[in-house]
Length: 382
Image 1 (cartoon, rainbow, N blue to C red):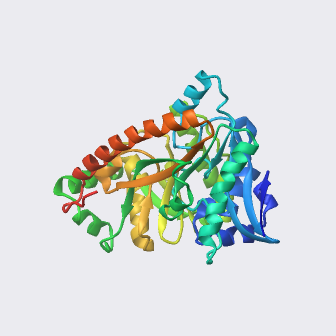
Image 2 (cartoon, one colour; image 1 turned 90 degrees about the horizontal axis):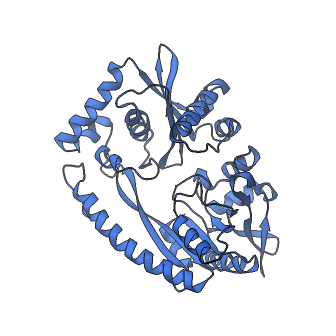
Image 3 (cartoon, rainbow, N blue to C red; image 1 turned 30 degrees about the vertical axis):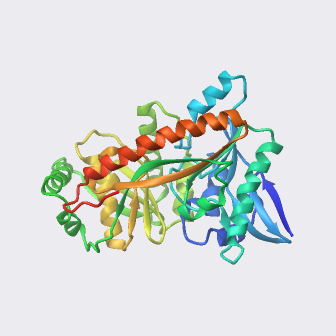
């Protein structure tokens, strides 16, 4: 018999049991990553996050789970529903708190409906999706949102109840067997190849040397330097930095060969840095910061160093983060991201469904236009 439970902390769930449900080495839904956010003060009510993880049991065995949070705002999600919140509050409703199934602060597609790979996989995923609706009503909440879903999980969501949404990100893929950066450049148009070489040369002329390091090789002072650069970027943009210095150090310990930092140095001193995580086949770009405005440095640390690492390590994909049309010119092609949303009030749900239908039509046209500006010499269609 199946039963559901909620948990106020991921540490209430056995790490090995949780990770067995993930099914691969995706770092962002691992117990170490999510529990690390909680333990190091990145997840707390003052920031609008309260853990409410959902687990599915068959007897004593854990057979399904999902990372779930009660959210007091819409910060740190990257699937923007501010307009829905404003509309509902203008109508006299309370949009917050809401439920969110996602990885905090991480616009990364990955497994959300965690379930053991067995003949009951589809049933477990469907049960978890239905449980989200049940929990939303039991708690009297406005809505529940599941962000950055994998395509193989979309079938668990009843189209009549859930609202579908998608967007574009820009990902690099080594589908042509490139052996090194020169191979990659040869696949680009002459104009883009020349521009990238110019950008990389600017960094060298500025007297900077770059290195790509595994997190396990960094000492605490180097992790602290990376965290300070992260804070500097958020301060410059007037945003709130939510990840703590302790969390950065935790990544180095928990993922010694799956966390990475690209540093730019001058005379040995750290000038800029970019942080990454990786799985067995994908590199994920996360945060960056610099203390000097050097032309081309952002592209070097956040994109070209990452591409070179993928080519060295045999990784097939590189996901550098959300948004950014400028990535297209540097070899990152559009890829759809998916989310599902349930709004408890039928009137609000119908209004949002209509708005998203119009949004999807615009995004389809936008995607076709993006592919027309592919940087590769031989272009692929949408």
